[in-house]
Length: 245
Ligand SMILES: CC(C)(COP(=O)(O)OP(=O)(O)OC[C@H]1O[C@@H](n2cnc3c(N)ncnc32)[C@H](O)[C@@H]1OP(=O)(O)O)[C@@H](O)C(=O)NCCC(=O)NCCS
Image (cartoon, rainbow, N blue to C red; front, side, top):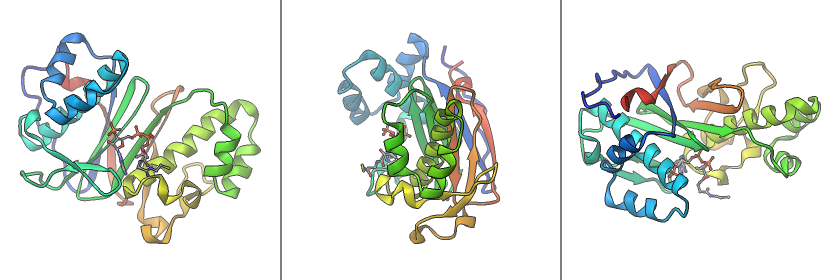
């Protein structure tokens, strides 16, 4: 059941990022309450999904995003307005008191991830690890040669999790930059360190050392990463389900 008491407003300052994860299998009661927060364009988008499960997951993701952001801003969830950047990155429309709040969203299967920060480039990516038919082709296209060599030297049982870990690091980065896949996944090159950092990124994105990159360790079946142009920032991971209970 959705929290009828307003949840204590999370406090965010410029030295931290809040990451929230959510299991999208919400109750029908929550589903109705989340639907009520959506605007006409979101309801229209929802109606275009063919399967009920995709509709439900969209409502859960978008409704929770609204509740989450509104709790930082002290506004009702339905009052938020979104717009998209040139390459589709959503942001709060600058018509209200957005307090410099920035966010990014990712979803895969029944899981979603939200990152919230203040006035910085940030991105998240989550992928449920699942067998992929053309994994070698993806590695050829999206990994740099050094990353491909490391991946190929792994025992077969470790290749799938390693593929998704690298993939989510790269996607979190391109989502932070906001320019989409056109940025070129293979031009973003990870170091071989146990906790990877960027060895090389497109020149237009600044220095590799400008960026924080973290694996979010959400469990055996999932790869998830956070990337932000704020190398020394603190971050914390919480369950967004608490906004619904
Ligand atoms: C953004 C993108 C990386 C999404 O990756 P994904 O792993 O499939 O999906 P995720 O669940 O992680 O992220 C989707 C969310 O990212 C956000 N998003 C959309 N475009 C974004 C962008 N350019 N930058 C950052 N975030 C973006 C949205 O919140 C989106 O949610 P929605 O689909 O419900 O609107 C990918 O779709 C993309 O690059 N889009 C831009 C268009 C583009 O360049 N196309 C080229 C195709 S070769």
